[in-house]
Length: 516
Image 1: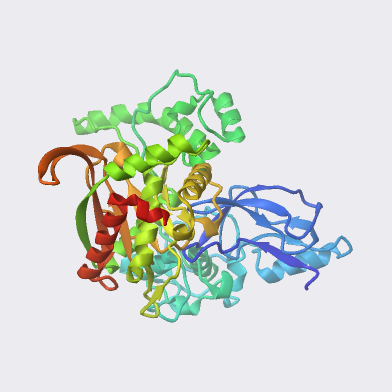
Image 2: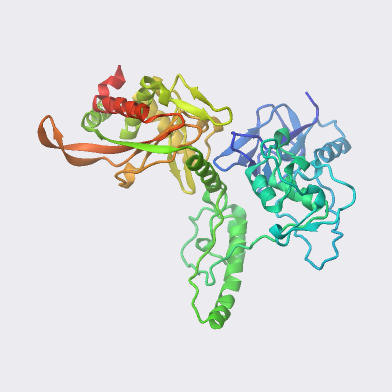
C-alpha cells in the first residue's frame, strides 16, 4: 500500500459524474484511522460521508468546502507524518494541480480575453498532454465568441471515448474531438472542466457565460427569517448587508440559502429599481417581473434520466381498478392487534407488488441497453418514490417478497426519513427491479408514470375512493383505486404486463394470500 495516497471524489453509482465537498470532518495535520469519516460529499441525490481507505495523516487540503469536482477529483493528500512536505507537493504536482495561468492567446484580434472558469482548480488541467507554446486559434461560426485551437478540432467518436454528458454536449457545440484530450476522472473519464482547461491552455477562448436574469424589482420582505434554512456564513453575511433571507433563492445543499444566494439578492436590490425605470421608459411596455432559476444538481439528474427513459424505452400503459375492501380490513386488524405497528395501504401494496413479481418473474427484470440483455432477479427489490423539496428519490425495499408486512412498514419509515434528510447511502436507492409511485394522498385519481431505468416497469397508484360498482350481482358502494402499469415494450409485452396486473389484483382483493 502506498505511503502517500490521494483522497478523491468517489463514484457512488453509475450516473454520478461529479460531487461537491460540503465540509471536512478533520483538519489539515490530523491523523485518522481506516474507515474513519473524513469529509461530507454531496451528489445530485444524496449527501454522504467519505471514509478513509487506510490509516494516515491529512497532510494537505486541496479542495475547499463548496467546490464541485469530477469523479476522481483530488480533495486532499494523506501520508504518514515523516514524509517530507516536498514529496507531498511533488505528489500533488504529479496529479495535476495547475500552478500558473494558461499562456496568453497569440490571436491579435481585439476580442476580449476569456474569463477564467468559475469552478475551482481540479486535477483536470495538468492531465492533458499539451504543447509548450500556444497554437493560433481558428474561429468557427458555430462557436460565436469561442475560438478553438486547430489541434483540438474534429468530431468525437462517442463510442470510444469515456466522457461526462456535459463534456460531450460542449464538445459537439464547439466542434472539439474529445479523443485528443486526456481526462482526469477514474479510468480516464473526461469532464467538462478537462475540455475547458485544454482549450484555454492552448490559447483558445471560450464563449461568455450568459448571466442569470433577475427580477427587475425584487421584493423587500420584512418577515421573520430566523426559521429559514441557511448556511451559517450566508446568515452572517445577510445580517451585515441587511438582506432578509425570505428574499433569497435557496440553491444550496438540501434547499438551504447559501452565500451566493445572499450576494445575488443584494445585487438585485441595488440594480433592480434603477434598471426598471429606464427600461420601462425606453420601451413603453411594462415587462413582467420574473426570475431565472438554474436547475439544481438533483433536478438535472432527474431530467436527464427520465428524458433518456422516455426517449429510449417504448412505453405503454395498462390500467385496472382494484377493490380495497379486504385490504383495508386486513390493515385495520393488523394495526388494532399488534402494538407499535402502524401499517399503511402503501406498505401493503409494496408487499402485494413484491409477491406478484415473484409469481410473474418475467416482470422482475432490468434491461441492460449496453449489452442488449435482460437481467432477471430472484428477489423483488421494490423502489418507492419519495417526494423531496427539490425533486424525488426512490429508496429500495430489498427482497420485499421475503419480508413481513410489519418489516416493510418499518423499513419504509426508516428509508423515507433518511431520504428527506439527504442521508441515504448509494446502495439504498440505486438499482431495484420494479418501482411504485403513489400520488393517492394528493388526491390524484389516476396518472401514468415514467419508467425508472434500468428497470422495465413502474406502477402508478391513484387515490382510494368510494365508487358505485357491481358486486356479487348487486349495486354496491366499494372502496376502489385505479392503478396504471407502465412497461418497457422492449422487455415486457402486453400479455405479460396483463398477467402481472391480474396477479396483483388477486393478491390485493384476497390479501390473506400475502400471509402464507
